[in-house]
Length: 246
Ligand SMILES: Nc1ncnc2c1ncn2[C@@H]1O[C@H](COP(=O)(O)OP(=O)(O)OP(=O)(O)O)[C@@H](O)[C@H]1O
Image: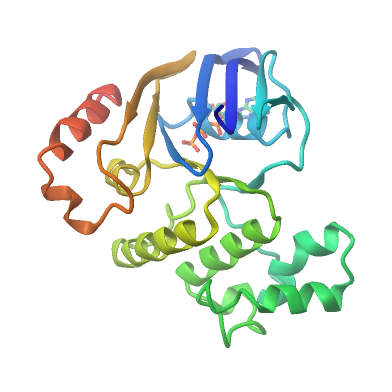
C-alpha cells in the first residue's frame, strides 16, 4: 500500500479552477518529484497534502487512513525556509519539539544531537542572517526532520542556491535520506535535480492542472553523479522536458 496518496484532488482558488484532478501515490521510503509550470498549483497541492487546506473534491490518505484536512501528520518545508530571524539556529530548529510540548531545555538538547549530521555543528548560536544559503536550508531541513514525521514535503528546498552549493546539498541530502528513510514529496523546477534525487516524477500541466506525466526513474538509488552517462538518462529527461513543453 502506498504511504501517501492524493486521490482526485480538485481545488478552485479565487474562482479559478487551479487543480482539476490530481492523483499521486508515493510508496513508503520513496522520493517523488513534482514538476510543473509556475502557478499550476504545486504549493497548493502540498498545502492540501499537509492538511493545511481542504480540497473541493478528493482525498488524502496517509498509511491507508483518510486524513484530508488533518494537519500535523507530515513534516512540511515551505518554499522560503522561514527561519525566524531573531532566534539562533538551535532555537529555530527546536521549534517543532517545543510546539509539541517539550520543555525548551530538553528540546535544545535533543536538537543538538543532530547538528553534525545537518552540517551545523559549531553554528548553533548563529542567527539566520549570519549563515550561508546552504546552511539556512540545512537548518530548515533539520527543523523539518525534528517535526518527526516519516513524511517530508519539501517545496523547492534548493531553489535559492547557487549551482555548486546545490550540488553539495544533493550529495548531502542523499546521505540524510538513506539514514532516515523518510517518504518524500519534493517540488522542483530543476529536471536534473529530479532525475538525481527521485524514484518517480510527476509532471503537472498548466491550469486547470492535471498530471501530464508520471514516470519511474529507471536508476537504482543512490543515484550517483555518473547517472548522467547512463543510456536511460536521455530518454527519461526528454520525456519530462516534453511534458513540461520546454
Ligand atoms: N489563496 C489564494 N487565492 C487565490 N489565488 C491563489 C491563492 N493561493 C494561490 N493562488 C494562485 O493560485 C495559483 C497556484 O499557486 P501555487 O503557489 O500553488 O502555484 P505553484 O505551482 O506552486 O507556483 P510556483 O511554481 O510559482 O511556486 C497561482 O496563480 C497563485 O497566484
